Amino acid sequence: MRSVLVPIAPEGRPFVAGGVVLALVLLYLGPWTGAIGIALAGWVAYFFRDPPRVVPTREGLLVSPADGVISHITEAVPPPELELGAEPLTRVSVFLNVFDVHINRSPIAGTVERVAYHAGKFLNASLDKASTDNERNGLTLKIADGRKIGVVQIAGLVARRIVCHAREGQTLRTGERFGLIRFGSRTDVFLPKGIAPMVAIGQRMLGGETVMADLQSTEGPRRGEVQ
Image (cartoon, rainbow, N blue to C red):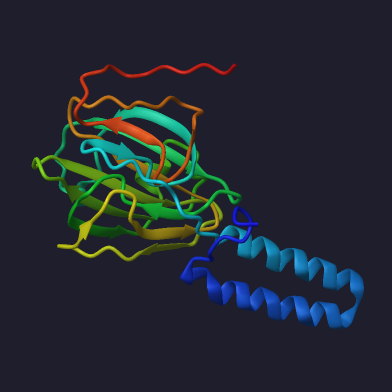
């Protein structure tokens, strides 16, 4: 039961309450409509679930900021609002479908130097150009050794609301919750120069748990295969 009855994110509680009210109204109208309402309310509660995670605590480990699947690993220039320079950095993209946990977590401990919102389109978040064309909210984290990490919340085809609680000057712990994106989205991470990801395209991630990179390692990029 502990794996099923997980906490609901505060941002989702009004939606869950609305779903329950709708379910009661539909149940009053008839058993079949009531069943639809109950299923809908259950799905909304499931979408906004916020399960606890066991966060790796060794210094230098960078964890996934979101649940989902690695959709892209490429070299790309960071969004200008992050102020990470004009040189390409390794960008790792995590695509979230509507059944994934949508809580965003800090990939590493650091100080929030930048929080920048950018209006844009609502293209399918699995497309590569979603990183530049879609509505997004970016964070720049400065870690203890002075290096910087970029984290970008990207709205998708269905997503219409990006929530970010982080503020400039705030210190985040590794795995700490800082926001969410409502109903399907993507989260990009820009790694420091010279750091290779420890994940592969198609790999499933758990936000706050799966190690995405090791800033203390000199290991090259990893490859994956479906077995």
